[in-house]
Amino acid sequence: MAWNELTAEPRRHDTTEQAPAGQAPAEQVPALAGLRLFGAFRLEGAEGGIAVPANEQRLLAYLGLHQRAPRSVVAGTLWPDVTEEHAQGSLRTTLWRLRRVRYPAVGSDGDTLYLADGVSVDVDDFTRAALRLTGSAPDPGDALPPLGLLTRGELLPGWDEEWICSERERLRQLRLHALESLSARHTRRGCYALALEAALTCVAIEPLRESAHCAVVTVHLAESNVVEAIRHYEAFRRLLRAELGIEPSARLTGMIPHRAKSVTRTPSSAETPERHDRSA
Image (cartoon, rainbow, N blue to C red; front, top):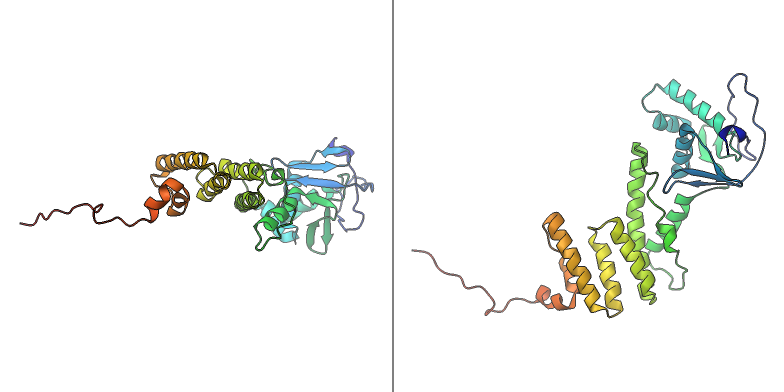
């Protein structure tokens, strides 16, 4: 679908911007849209993907992550290396072009811009599921989200703007905690294959994250697969030694049956190394 074929006006929100001289106003063509920010930018309409130029992508992505913001903040964030007047002009042009998409994607309320009602954002779906998983006192009967909802790829890979990098790290941490929580919930319900899949996915994202390896060991022990638990512990121990020169924590080591006693036991007098008095 070509960019210049897509024309639209908002149905309910004021997105009025002055069109460049010689350009006719856009036709009203309402539609539904979905904004996808995980993996790669994608704006989806009723007829499939919609081609969006770079500046318009950045504006939609910013509003998709922040919901709403003053025009001055949006302009200053997206065009930080130009004058305020130039940045505001670029924002006006970008908003006008967005009106030509076959869905009213951006709304305005005075000086505030926001993503229009009805534009679904995959980051919102992910965040709701992750926060529900990591919340306290969960209801045992709650339906758990599918693993695929938590593993949709990195946020806008290749985008190096500061506002993207900070959000990318926030969502990465939320993803890791959510996967560990999902593994724990599945383990308590006896769904060990699903629990192990969630835990190992977390390990794949961050191989040096000890709490993720604890989740893997927990699943193996819950299934009475002690050998598997030991094998995984030893592999993680070798990785830590090679990468950081350290040992696993006492918490993880204490989970392994053949090592638990050595972690908590106090050496007896017979096991205490003899000290030699070398004083003259």
